[in-house]
Length: 531
Ligand code: BES
Ligand code: MN
Ligand code: ZN
Picture 1: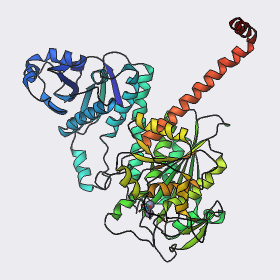
Picture 2 (picture 1 turned 135 degrees about the vertical axis):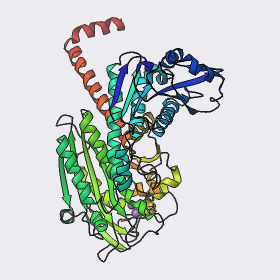
Picture 3 (picture 1 turned 45 degrees about the horizontal axis):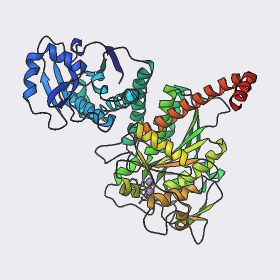
Picture 4 (picture 1 turned 90 degrees about the vertical axis):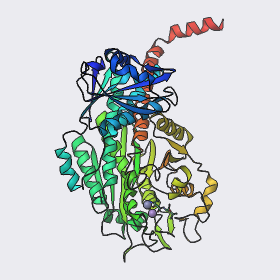
């Protein structure tokens, strides 16, 4: 959805519903837009002061009198708006917009300054990004396969179709850009969610390749698809060990976004794209197995991010790689105990065919070494253990570089798509040893499933700075809620910040050169100081 930005009093807007926050410090407290609205509709709104609807965060809906152009007022009451930074305010906005959807408002205006007023000025533009992202993402539905409700939907004229942010004065360029970034990131999340929600019979490795090709065509990205037979010839034995049990051939998909200069080393994102994970011969129990259609959400997030990059055009180079395969048990499938040679040359004893993500990823991570990456981040629904450790709140983060880990943690925190770091000590490696091969694909010990999986991957990432995001708990929550689009916000925030700091560094380098030319006066000054 595109957000309209209007600079006027909210009671002047002709919309179905307006959303305004209030808080109460003893008295009902309206912010600026709310206050002018209150003054123009005092008769209707004055009795509210007596109402006790501010005992908790909540929503009150009030029909507006005729003098006001909007029909319905949605009041978001927020007890402590300054608490938890933008989180409380974002949640209030979400609740407000949900209410607008409930009453089938087609057009909504939000008194945005009134929400922002509670935040420190320097966090304003980041908050705008968070708000626009959350509000654009909220109306998302996945009803492609609902034949009945689809016709019903076209009959219903009133689905949310316009959203306006109402401001007191013109926006700064940075605020404007932040709102736009939120919209674009939400659109990237939509692509990620759609792919995740599609069933396994539709979203196959070939479908992911087609999606990547379409994205490349629309946005002038370079795309390469390496098919299973080529991978086999190349020696990607770990990848092929997973793909061979399925009728759907596996694919390694590579998308290249070039926003930087030719010599800039690329950031590389690698997504696990298991389009359905039955477990293979180590087959999973039947209950809830349908959710394994989401096992390609890492790959879907790579595509979502590539879409965002091609729209926001940051000045960096990014390569998105997808290891796409289906994990099935058939007559040609890998048996537990089989030993394969990975692309790196390291041999792997596959003790459990359900630990397939690390197998496709290790070959993809070896393959991308040829790009001499600046930084590599893989994104994978890798372990059920990650849900045990962190639930659905934070993505698991493991890295061979603490600088990168802290940058990713900061980005996640800033855009409210958090990750949490787990240790990747070398001492965990002993659990991944095999008596017969260089590595086993499952741990010989109990516990630390997320760490031992990452520890396995770390054997293939020693040549570069690397982080692993285990999104088993965050990419979707349950079959009903569907895909979340995470960690697209975290990754976008990280890459956009990187692009900004890079341009900043090159900017600071340029004046230094000019100073160097006038080196004589600088020396004189230094001498004076020494004297
Ligand atoms: N895709 C699963 C991990 C998963 C499970 C994600 C449930 C989200 C929800 C992965 O391929 C898997 O099966 N992992 C095994 C590893 C084990 C065999 C070492 C797991 O987590 O049980
Ligand atoms: Mn599995
Ligand atoms: Zn899996």
